Length: 499
Image (cartoon, rainbow, N blue to C red; front, side, top):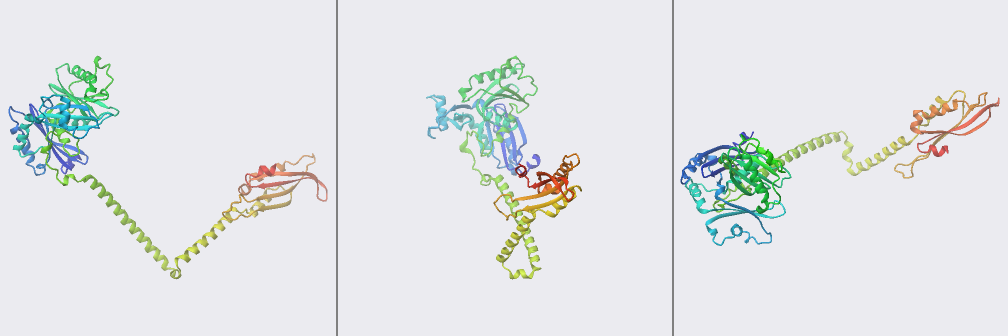
């Protein structure tokens, strides 16, 4: 997908690294899914000015119509650039914090002529202390490169130290671990290596050291210990919490051994990017855009930004898409409303009397019907169907017992009344014959249990109890009988009545 989007990139950039031994160029296309490197070329640098080498690398690229105006980022060899990071005071005026003044204070030399140097500074604050990083190089060292670019009809977009481009390429591929305020990235080459101490993926210092066969791990450990003991000099607030080694996958066991046993920092190993001219050119191209917080030793030569490149195309695309989706949704909603209105008019056409009735009359009629419906619903939901209750009692009453009296009471409550629960009860007066033994018939307890298990009474009057047990004789034959009362009450009131 990236390869397809690279044909229509949002932005193009060219990275050019002019080293002491090699000259490398990288062609980078920025897409919606990220940057894509389209081409990389490395040529050896002959003695003398690099004009011919730069022309042979840039002319084939700039001959293409799409890449004629692509910005070019140039990298200076780190050995020829002075770089330092120091804490600064925020109370000082902006004039006192100019790159030239900061360089003079860092070097503290009265014989230094700053006019013969190109200087740039970056102010940032990774932690509690505000810092200022200063990069400078002699104009005499930068002049051959600028003259070669001028002969090719090119004005550099920015000129920065080569280690900054290599660090940018490493961060793009492998992010710094979380909760790591500072890290040491080591880039391995064939004969030399570069160690960069970073905070918030920005360099605090860098250091070159040679690599000898068989002692690569010892050289890395020695560099780590040196930087860990002097990190405060470079503006760091904590020693490196991680050691990230890039390049030379043929070397194994670099972060292992007895020497690393006492190292508390995490050791991470990646195959790339290595300390290579092509990788540096790729990192330079990655930082060739206006939002990059990068050094520029030739800021006065930066060509003006085209007006179209300053427009936020990404935001315009997102907002245009959101506006188009919202417009389509509103159009569909309008069509739905129109369809509902047509259906409503068709229904109203079937009732001619609606034309002579205004909206106020319809609202009054609606409110009146609503009140009537609520009254009927309240009555049906709160009433007791006495017919069902009496039929249930008659079915459950044993043949030997006589129902002498029945009294049902249900208080009517108005809708939305705040008087509490209405009073309801069902009282049954029952006579049960006493057997010859003189004990109460077990059919009495059976009747009470059957009434409690009745689903009809469970819904209307679930609390059922017995009260008023009396002994006596009933009927013309004066047969001994027991009279008692069965009370059926709403839920929550049975205990009070039984007491």
